[in-house]
Amino acid sequence: MKALLLDDDPYALEFLRAVLSERYPGLEIHARSEPDPTGEYDVYLLDDDFEGVRLAGKLARRIRAQRPEALILAFSASLDERTLKELLGAGCNGVCDKRVPGDLPEMLTALDRCMGELQRDTERPPTDLSTRYLVNTFRDLFRAWNRRLDSQE
Image (cartoon, rainbow, N blue to C red; front, side, top):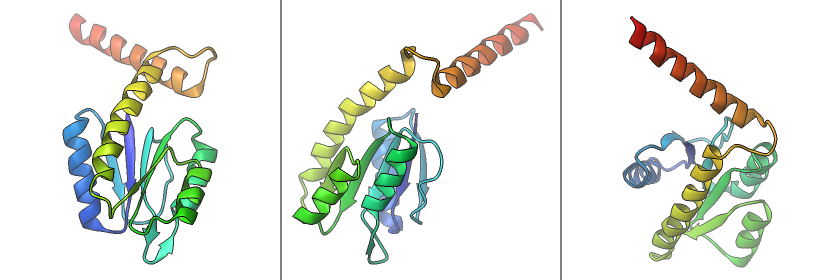
């Protein structure tokens, strides 16, 4: 599973990376300081403010259009009712207010549940032959064949 962290604050990026690395050792974590959500990730953690411009809503809509099954979490240091509605309306699965100390632990508890569900979803064969399922299936087959070839040498 892969996660993308987007935040223009390098300290926040490193903090989130450290928390996620410790909590989910198998999670592949990518971090960017610019608001660029391109790529295929299972989890997106977005800062709301990039150099004074609120972009998390726009980013979430873009991600949701490209990756409908992804988990999107937004962090805001100026979370008001309008921003909350925008973020949730844009497809965020959760929003964390950076000013409230109890929000991050609650967000991580919710993330634990979501990560478990995502893991189960990636392991379960879909009802159709989705691209993700086919890629995972072929990857597993290639690995199995490589192990067999290595053992024959």
